[in-house]
Length: 320
Image (cartoon, rainbow, N blue to C red; front, side, top):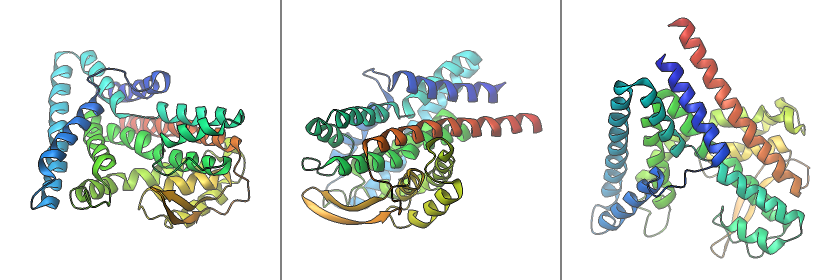
């Protein structure tokens, strides 16, 4: 009964995100986490022992939010299974992202279809940290595909996997560290020491989800129909390690391989050209339609993640 409620809560949370996106409430969990990190950043990121303080923030903050979530969820389940189900669904809904990313990608696609390059650049700047004001159509498309490929695991698949194996509290634990990495995990003078722990913990937590997600992404070739699964899988494995991130390369390489395009290459960040390795060797030209195919990869990967989790849950119920 509990495993069924657990999987149902995860499924409903995923569907709520697909239908409505992030809950638009002032007490959104990720917003609370973000404010907590900002406060801790202002208090701890100064003086001596900066690296140790960053580690303290990551461990203390993640354990705190995990404990609060676990305690509240257990109380709800003890009160009534349906109360626990509703509470867990809400927590998982807060942790699973994706709708906003897909909406942004689709809006950029529509702008490019109307040859509204300025609007496409502005909207692209909202999902990437690189300079977009001089981008052409191909560069915008490449940026969207790279961001989409990377975030399939970070925003959607990883919290679903942690939510399945550890319930909503573990998904909250993951979301705290992932948010901390997004806020302070930079190699700048300000955050190189303080954000080190957040970046390393995020790398560890995303190590398995990134690889499993990339594998599932390659299975979407049947829908995109640009290459065979064998070709997509081999290219994903080959090019994933070219990326400077231990995890992001898998999602981006999988996206490039499935769509039969080439991602990466010279990119402008904060006024400086960064020469990134190319991911993929596809001959397909980067066109507006590639964005639609990238959205399809995202959508079908989410369905495959859910399918696999229900399969695992079903096997558990049979063997239990």
